[in-house]
Length: 259
Image (tube, rainbow, N blue to C red; front, side, top):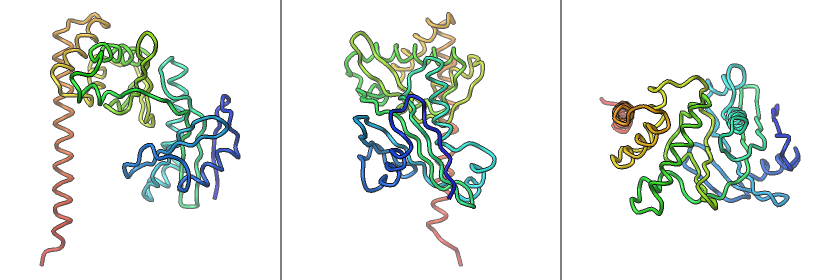
């Protein structure tokens, strides 16, 4: 089996440390996220708390594709993290990625980053109208997103759980996670509004989002609000169609063959 890896120059861990974590990935460590597709665990080594994301083994076509035609999710996560930090956008410090290849293509891949102790995500802001300093946090989140857009970054998975929020002495700090899907281009207004579409349909929150983004861009608040709602409705329509199709397919599979 062939191994491909990159270790960040700032990493205090060395090759043997990462290999040891991988060898003991399923028997040691603390589970952070296990939702079926990918598994994230934390390990403490040399006084450093490290998050490790193990990506699900892809189907055969993608296994070959990730070997010969496109970068793995682990590699993309690492490289996107490096780009974000270079552009001044918060994300947990990338440490390394490892890829394991068989003759059939990629088999296992891992992305390593420093653990961030965070206070909340956007999900808590959406679900709890009484969350302390809720509007302030949302407006600072918009400023963070605006800076990302100004740097030509389009985060495809800009959703409620993919920004860690940390309360500091004066304000709030934001760190992007789940980084394997990024695009880089000069974002027009349509793209910027589309990037908010996965976050919420709550009218109060959308009003805050659009109002703050209008202040930052100089566009009329009414225009930003309309454009944002258009993007949200397009996303929800597309999402609902996908869910309906999945349910129909699953329903047909559960029925089994007809005689």
